[in-house]
Length: 243
Length: 243
Image 1 (cartoon, chains in turn blue, red):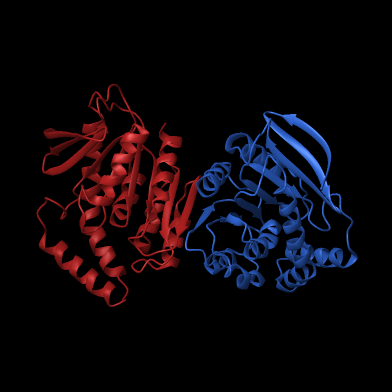
Image 2 (image 1 turned 120 degrees about the vertical axis):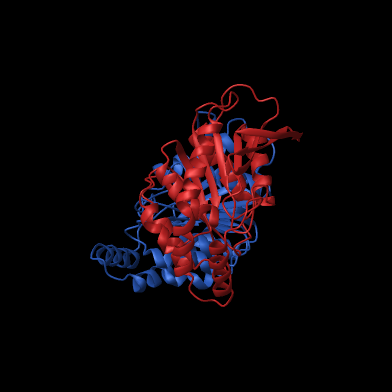
């Protein structure tokens, strides 16, 4: 893990890093000493590690919760090169979605192409972050919506170091089998008028989670309209389960 | 409004009262001075104004939120006389529910028999409570599950003094039209494995609420299994909207 730059704003220090070919960012409370719980944040499709929705939440998690927070560019996103096969599937996915057609085949293709790599990368990043003095080997949370949930479900299912997760804006049926392997507490967010994810599929994915403690939070609005109060709720959820 | 008794426990004072033939209870922070927001709590079917679930939440709302909190015995419950017609419908309702049969006809009959009276009683109690020095005419919230939601929906729809409501454990289709008149912020609780309320009907009732700001919270478990974390969430919801 190689640290590239460091800058502070509003009580939070942002460290850019790379691990092999993975570009990432770590936020910690300014002058953080000693170990602290870590939240990993998975960005959405077409976004990147410092997309506005990631950045704003990461700052609050670090400043108000005292957490360390990390995000990476997942394959084919942000500063990373794009793969032709991924591009072809993603274009097909967007075209079918815009036409209101079923995207299950594209979901499966994208998932098969990239999920193994995404999970392995998150695991390597987590192991490296846990070596840092001001993080240590403490409890880990995962926050990811949409594509960040599609990659998050297999990661959380595979990774015993993750103790709690905020997931959502996702209902691809291909994820149900893996969701049924998740047993940690989950807060699952659903937008009631989501133009991208059919409501029934999202409810079915929530249903599939094996967690004894799971809560669905549904709010009016489209895919991009998560209300600010859900960030408060995520913060309290992580404080309860990782604190 | 006639006050009958007063007792304090754990920083909360409990006042028993009657208003005409309505028996009620008011909880306030001990030694409360000056005005404060008021939460009205509607108990469930077969319960009463001091049922354990009401009592425990009322204490937390008063002790931790500084709210005044009131509950009454609704008609045919608690200390109140029972009406033969109500008893007949309630017995039929319980029998059909136990047999897994549809209860829509009984819902409508009970609703028609009693809802006008229940709404008028809540309004009279609210007006009387607002005359008290240590409450005053400030913002009002309503909390009611199950039967407390069935009566709460028409009350909240009819009553402009109510600014926010926590409702749920209810999905009777007869309530949908009235739910569509509610515009204040609502937190709506649903138990994912509710043995009394079909999930699809509860989702439809949440859908019917006209509130721009409404959040569905769904948790695993049966009708009586609301998790303790939802009391924390109710407290924060009321603090946000009535504070």
